[in-house]
Length: 505
Image (cartoon, rainbow, N blue to C red; front, top):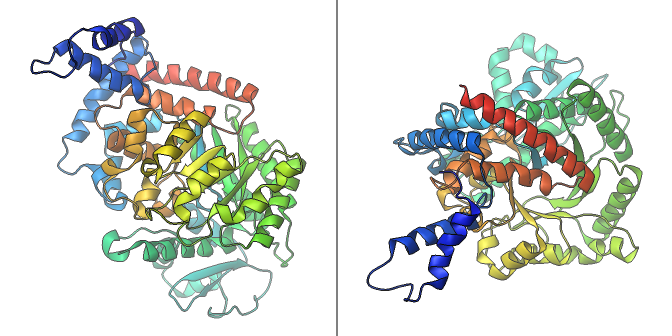
């Protein structure tokens, strides 16, 4: 399965290009067939990666592991993730991917980084944590020094410490976990369409909001998020963050500057404990339901944050469901402001997270490129737009592919049919990320890497594919060129160690 030497590849291609007889005829030449197959391999992700001898041996081992999973009566990428997860966790391929250095996570949302069990079993047991129950069978949390004021559509606030003395704590905790994730035993029945699943998705963020915006928890949450990604062998993270006001126990509100300073402080503390962690940066986000006046203010805030925090401020993006939000073109006047003022504010736009072809929203990928986006978040609709796809390739704008998110949010059911399978086969600029892993009861990147490696690539994807994807994650990051080079060198050193150690197992 190892990649052929370039001389051998070129020789095979010459057979195709220089042979005097027609390519397609009644007696196909086996050499031409081999050459065409090699040409397809060369074009795909990892096709230009030449594996060394140790990597070739590991690639053969990985191939055998893949064969085992391919032979399963239930193939995990063809199933809903909630049903496939136990199968994935038993897979030797998944164990391999967990140990593999994965570089960077470039598409992760702030309040969906940390496993919800940590939130419930740790945070909700802290002092001064109150809960109320909503009319739509959900919950809200709040930390307060005294009895909080009543909230519309919510029951009276109850101190959780008091409530736990009256109820079965295990049952109560499990109910909180259900409210903080989308998990369902029968996801197709629970979420019959995109409207239902998106409503539930956005509600889960509201449940987490009162916990993670409490100032002391904000810092602890970020630290734990970095730790969970680090434990999945990730060395750098770019976090899409709304930066809502955090609050103190007495109700005082903190500014976005406070949040950015808190991020700096947490990152410094984290790197002191884990020196091989490269770092993290923030992509400031706002909801795409804003009007133009609000968008102008948001872009101006982003410019100010970038000026004040250049080390950790990566850029700007819109979040929220694309199909029900305003298209990028609506915001163009706001998004043109930085350039008009001679300021470079990088953009990392969510675009193409839709299956609504021909709508205004369906033009978001084109408009993202016209606005000089650095990457495209999701890009699920990319294969339906050949001009956009070609332009993105020429501009070297990577697509941030989030397989599990796209499946859970009902853009695709069988991940073998995900449009990214085509992009991978064509060698389109691409990185794999996890979007909102906590809401899907996933973590880090390993689950999404499994779905991409097994589902998108089938038996064609190999160790070279994985190596290219992890290198891509740093190549397409917002780090400076010097830091990219340094981080990539560190990644490849970890990669070589991983290869050597895995061969011995």
